[in-house]
Length: 360
Image (cartoon, rainbow, N blue to C red):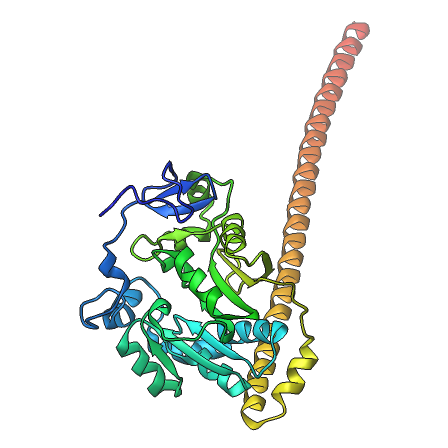
């Protein structure tokens, strides 16, 4: 293990951030302290290499994440719909696309159904076969640097939760930029380091960003500032940040060498409805939108219920205060009444004594 690995920007003078990470003050990136060996980043033997079959069948599950089978079933109507909306906002089919780290291949299949000329890329041969059998997705094997792809041949490169795993993000992203057509672009999802907040503050506030401090996998954790710097240095200064599906700890951005003009949702719908498979994708988008609206309405109703409950609690507390005040006043009146009666009895007794003396 190498505990003095430089930042991707070349800076070697790093400051302590947490037990597992340094912070590069030069570009605001978190850098793993104990760097894994070079062989970690390729899959030769699927049974023993880190990103081989075990990673998907046991490692992620033991770490509390869904199994690959669960993800293959549930992702289509969750994160894949979120990604599809963003793809259609910035590029309509047909277009040649490549998804790095495509996992089970579900999104590659959706892209194909939507009318894109789509393919995926994975390190593990076992996972490549899984994607092909589960979704019929065309998937390449190995790193992007090792693929025999023509320069300027891709319209769109996607990588969701990949950048933080790369040992040399500058070199890998430079290769991606070489593969893009002049009007092509990338869509990136990666954890977002919240600059300006200390590790102690993040722990104290139980911030969900803590979930992204995963030293077994995440090598560099970018901030918005460092992500902009990385791609600007590679000739892509236009970054359009969209809401991330896991907005508590991720960032989601479109990266381009030129300005982009978004499409309307209606334009995307019209393209999808032109062929049968596209209609299925549109139906999934519609179902996802309906689900999100139901969730929004439920949260709105729940917030209103909570507000009403708080109002009732405050009214109850006020009633208790009024009742306590009434009781205190009553006790005071009772004491005053007892004092008055005692004084009256004393006056009556004194008058009787005076009358008795006068009679004698």
